[in-house]
Image 1 (cartoon, chains in turn green, brown):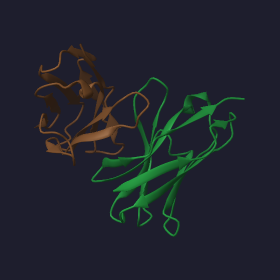
Image 2: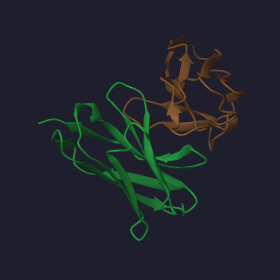
Image 3: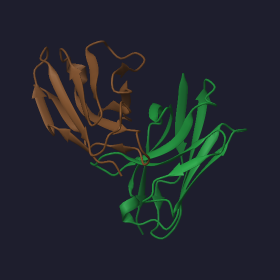
Image 4: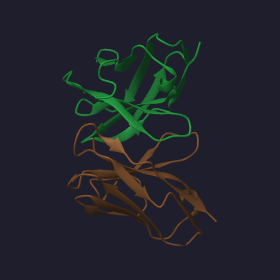
Amino acid sequence: QVQLQESGPGLVKPSETLSLTCSVSGDSIRTYFWGWIRQPPGKGLEWIGYIYYSGDTNYSPSLKSRVTISLDTSKNQFSLTLNSVTAADTAVYFCAVGRGGFVDYWGQGTLVTVSS
Amino acid sequence: EIVLTQSPATLSLSPGERATLSCRASQIVSSHSAWYQQKPGQAPRLIIYEASQRATGIPVRFAGSGSGTDFTLTISSLESEDFGIYYCQQRGTWPWTFGPGTKVEIK
C-alpha cells in the first residue's frame, strides 16, 4: 500500500510561483510514474504532468512553459513548481502515483488559491 | 489532444437498478481507458483500467467494456455507496485526458 501527502502554501499571489511537495510512503514504487493532477473548484480533472524514477518527464502542452516536476528519491518526495500563476490556476492539486498511465494512488488533494 | 465525451451528464437511479455510463474519445485510444469514481471532498478512486480490468478491491458489480473510441462502465446492481461522479480517462496519447464526468445519483 502506498500513501501520498501533499504539502505547500494554500494561497499564492498572482504572477508568483506555486510550489507543492508530495511525500510518498509505503511500498516500493520505482516502476511507477509520479504525477500531478488538478481540479478547479466544481470542475473536472486535468493532468499537469508526471515524472518517472529515471527522471524522464512529460508535461501538459498547455502548461509546459510554466511547470516543472522534480523527484527526490532519497526523501521519497516529488515536487511541482508552476510559475506565473493566475486565478485560472486556482484548483485542488492532487499528487498521483500509478502505472501504465492510470492512477493507482492519490493524495488527498490540497486547495491552492491564487489571489492577492 | 484527445477529447473525451461522457453521457449522460447525470444518472438518477434506485438501488438495485443497472447503471450504464458511456465515454467516447475523439480519436482511437485502443483499450487504453480507465474509469474513476469521485465522491465529494475526496480524491478519485480507480475502478477500471485498460477498458475492462477491475482495479484492486473493486466489487464485481462494476464492469468495463469497449475499445477504440467507445467505452462503457456498467454497474450491474447499484448500491447506495456507488453515488458520485464517474470520470473516464485515456492514456492512448499524451496529454492523457479525462472526460467531464457523469454524476450518479441514488434515488
